[in-house]
Amino acid sequence: MKYTFNFKLILSVCLCAFLAASCVKEGPMGPPGEDGADGADGRDGVDGNVTCLVCHASDNIESINAEFAMSGHFSGEKAVAYAGSRQGCAECHSHEGFVQYAEFGEVMGDITNPSAWQCNTCHGIHETFEGEDYALRLNDPVSAVYLEDIDASATMDLIGNNNLCATCHQTRTPEPNLETPGEETFNIGSSHYGPHHGPQANIVLGVGFAEIDGTANYPEQGSSYHYNEDASCIGCHMGEYENGGGHTWKANLDACIDCHGSDMDDFNYGNGQALVEAELNKLRDKLLELGVVAGDEENGYHPVTGEYPMLQAQAYFNWIGLVEDRSLGAHNPKYVKALLANTIEALEANE
Ligand code: HEC
Ligand code: HEC
Ligand code: HEC
Ligand code: HEC
Ligand code: HEC
Ligand code: HEC
Image (cartoon, rainbow, N blue to C red; front, side, top):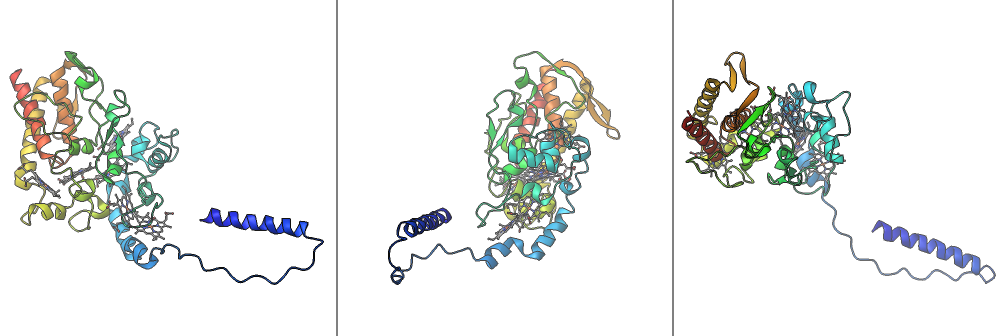
């Protein structure tokens, strides 16, 4: 629209100049002709007061600020100091790193003075200013980091804006038998070995863990009732702030209640979390017995580096990943239960 207008303007300026130059010797110009008919009306503008204020009203922004101040993203306590400046970690560990990743597709170098999350870590610039345009920097399906060295084009789709969360909250390492397929043993080479501390997107989708054979069936990828528009990262961790949620990103009990009925006063629906916790402890005790894991409740547990039968390395990978997911099964009850049942069953069969 603007271009056409300017183009016409330039055209008429040139035309006038041309006419002025070529008609210099002629008599004075006649009176201007009548105005032309009005053009068609333009498209209606968005009603600024209604649409913009839905989100930009000052009390809404103030309560979001207050919620944000309670969140782990805001403090960045664990994330930023250790890994926020390093080029290989910063895409998920600092404001600067994530913004570079979102804008350029990579982190350009080490970051001198990294910061924790801010509003414009996740929010960039509006595209339409309408409806559900939250001006989020990323919401396309994410590249599956754990498959980077195996199939660099592999993606995971956590549904719309949840992909923002999945950019960071995903596993970084293929499970042992995917990293070195068919080998009888696997070397746990570092005390940090595992899928990485935030594997939540993989669990919700149901992909990327060691699917050891056994009596339990693994549900199809993306078939969980918690992989859904409403039961999603944003559905369960955001929404109206009250029982968690909003910009605290604490799991929101009201979201569970909306689907599961009003008789829930914690996340342990149907005793699900307690059962998963018990199975995780059972698996840990087996890994302690086998010497794959050392430590105790008080000082924490860590893997003992060394060469292990493939099954034991896979069992370790599943255990540490499911512990670090920290939802105790809530992210995908069927997938988590199947992983635990088959892992424990296979270890027992080898005793
Ligand atoms: C669905 C919610 C929503 C609506 C509706 C909305 N905004 Fe925003 N807007 C945001 C969020 C979220 C941010 C980023 C956080 C912040 O800066 O407060 C933002 C940022 C902005 C910014 C600063 C960043 C930028 O994009 O340059 C401007 C300016 C802005 N909005 C203008 C508007 C105007 C004008 C309208 C109405 C036409 C509007 N917004 C409607 C949510 C909304
Ligand atoms: C740029 C990467 C990144 C993005 C994007 C991101 N997170 Fe995080 N998130 C992290 C890191 C790193 C931590 C650990 C922060 C710390 O404790 O220092 C974290 C912490 C959390 C926690 C624990 C918070 C607490 O209070 O201890 C929750 C829950 C969470 N994120 C959910 C989400 C959800 C939901 C989204 C999407 C709306 C999201 N995250 C987007 C990287 C990210
Ligand atoms: C693909 C995203 C991603 C990358 C890349 C990444 N991390 Fe993380 N990391 C996370 C997320 C997300 C969390 C927080 C998870 C949570 O709170 O559940 C985290 C947590 C951590 C923690 C905290 C553990 C704790 O709870 O105390 C450490 C340490 C860490 N990462 C180290 C690193 C290092 C070192 C690198 C680079 C070599 C790195 N990370 C690269 C996503 C990533
Ligand atoms: C970790 C990423 C992240 C950060 C940091 C973040 N937001 Fe948001 N914000 C989101 C997501 C995701 C949504 C919801 C999108 C949806 O519902 O699909 C959202 C929604 C919003 C909305 C519209 C919904 C509402 O509740 O009115 C506003 C306004 C907003 N954010 C402002 C802010 C402000 C202001 C800050 C800083 C104090 C901030 N955001 C920080 C991810 C983030
Ligand atoms: C079905 C609802 C649901 C969905 C879907 C969901 N979460 Fe959760 N999430 C939970 C519950 C419940 C917990 C455990 C909270 C507790 O026990 O205090 C949790 C725990 C977490 C934690 C650890 C928080 C902490 O403070 O220890 C992170 C990080 C997290 N979720 C991120 C995500 C991300 C990222 C997604 C999307 C990939 C997601 N969640 C999807 C319900 C959900
Ligand atoms: C969008 C709706 C929805 C939301 C939100 C939701 N769930 Fe679910 N959830 C379901 C459905 C449907 C099922 C399968 C039917 C059933 O077991 O009730 C299910 C199953 C479960 C199961 C497995 C039950 C079993 O015996 O196998 C657990 C545990 C669970 N949900 C916990 C939670 C928690 C905790 C939250 C909140 C953090 C939550 N759900 C949020 C829809 C939802």
